[in-house]
Amino acid sequence: MRISVSSDMDEPVARSLVAALRERGHEVRTHGALRPGDDPQWAVCSEAAAREVADGTADQAVVCCWTGTGASIAANKVPGVRAALCTDAYTADGARRWNDANVLALSLRLTSQPLLTEILDAWFAGEPSADAEDRQNVDRVRLLDHGKTRM
Image 1 (cartoon, helix red, strand yellow):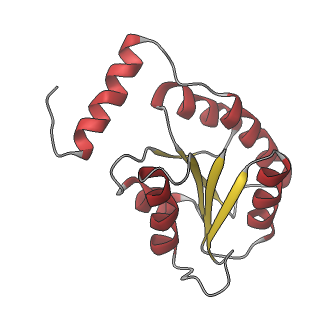
Image 2 (cartoon, rainbow, N blue to C red; image 1 turned 180 degrees about the horizontal axis):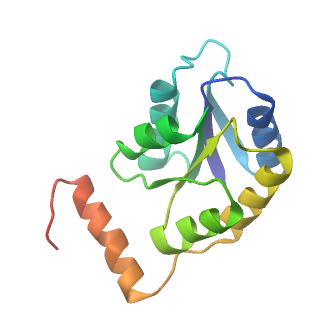
């Protein structure tokens, strides 16, 4: 899988994230502080990673900042992106299952190495739900990307 990763800070957990994704066999493209010469501002690098998902050059993305909140907000401004800030495995599983999230947002402050592994395990094991109500909600979000509110 092609995964775009951004971080506004070159923190050990961000480096561990990139290494873990590569160990899992993913093709990783980095942005922000993880890529020399790139703009490390969270809004800029999170948008860059999210745009790669929206334009199809990445299958998914992981965006990181100190709390994860700013990165998730910036990523969610890109039409077609459904970013979820996940601080535990249960949330990561639910984000993939019920929200069909395609961008994982992480906190550099809160995410330890063991927690990172648990979150990634849940994220990649999660499959979008086939439940009609769940699909309807995801479809509604897609409409919002285009400024529509009715199906």
